[in-house]
Image (cartoon, rainbow, N blue to C red):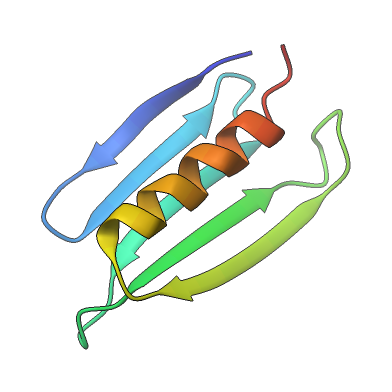
Length: 75
């Protein structure tokens, strides 16, 4: 299953997995750092997961988000 971009604006970029049971979000904080969040819901066919990291650079946040989307892709 793939991921689709569900929201992209000046503050938040969020992808949703095609089954609707997982999201990955990058959000810029007020201090200029970036929060990357993974949320795989209990209803998902894979194990429930939640993780959150704070990174200093947008590029690092985008790389972490891409890694999680690859790791939690169902294809």
